[in-house]
Amino acid sequence: MAVIPFAGNPLDRASDKRGDAEWIAARRRDSESLVWPLWRLQPLLLGPEEHDARSVEPAYLRPGLAEEIAGPDAISIFLGLDNGRALLALDISAAQAPADDGPLAGLGHFRDARTAAQLLPLKDAAIMGQAKALIDWHQRHGFCPNCGARTTPSDAGYRRHCGACGADHFPRTDPVVIMLAIDGDACLVGRASRFPKGMFSALAGFIEPGETIEEAVARELYEEAGVRVRDVTYFATQPWPFPSSLMIGCFAQAESREIALNDHELAEAFWLEKSKVRALLAGERVDGLWIPPPVAIAHHLLKRFAEMP
Image (tube, rainbow, N blue to C red; front, side, top):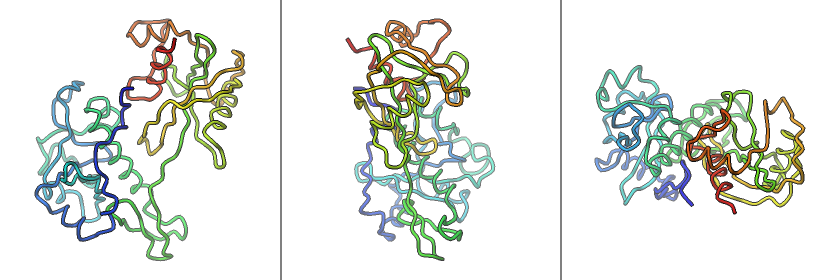
């Protein structure tokens, strides 16, 4: 099975080193280390700004080049080791226009993470997803949810500590089920109201406390489309850094094709024949429909369905 974007991170995360403040400080000074700056959650890229995936790559910098524009409280994340060399992410959101002015001017361009993930090689997209999710988490969790005091980053970016009440807070990942209900040669797809007209995808929803993956799949399909299912099977997972979810891809066998749409959840839902899925994957125009691009696990669910005998 092909690697799904944001999966397949090649780094040795060296989690046992995160608590060693001296070791981390040394890596941040080491001239062999590489730093990937993100400006307002957009990674710095090398290559043309046009959509040309073959020539876009991460703009890794040597330590010291971007730190002066990052600000004194900038978040620095130790991402891991690549053949013994440290890779770090640096939040430079404090800079006004780093691509046009200052030490980074002319070195590359910043792109939103969704677009960057479609242009970067898969291994770099996975590293970028890790960096984006962690910096995003720090930006959202500057204060302690226990007492309201300001927290400080620790463990190379993988913990925030509250000095007032002593609480420690760690990055969270929200599990989401995304699934195709199948009946014979057709699968159930839907369109949320926020989707462009004609765009359909697999149904999805967050797993609730005290719920298994299988239970969440069955509940979400019934809540959104009124479809009862059985025989839930696992397909694959995808880290999804928007802001920080784990998409758990599944298939399920539908008990019938009757749809009772919950219009608070979906604008439309229908059964899509396998022949049309194959045509859409081949780039053909089918009834004005289009499906998610390969950056999304929904695309890979549809692709696997199309390959089923």
